[in-house]
Length: 107
Image (tube, rainbow, N blue to C red):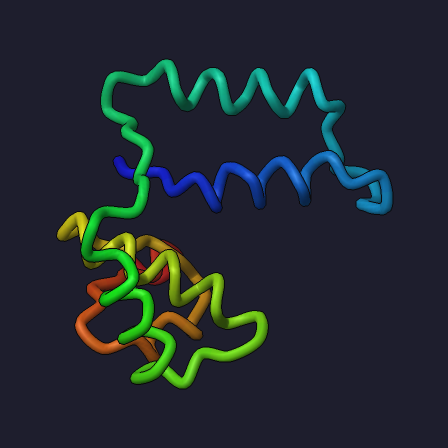
């Protein structure tokens, strides 16, 4: 399983937000969760390759991904770079050409 660094950062940002009602983690708890993910032999972190700007630019332009959708375009680009399949319930990812994605809630 590939885990983009952006997703790790987003998890920490959201799940330690004190404005989150009833479900936030302490920083210690959240980093322990990430440590557990990173400790799995089947998990690898995804960093941009030399082809990243080409793919990222393509996702932004062809997917018309401005504003908040730019971060989705970056994840789409990483997924394509590594030849993966993105598992997400976010239908916004359908806009990215060449991205293979699956909604795990409908499988």
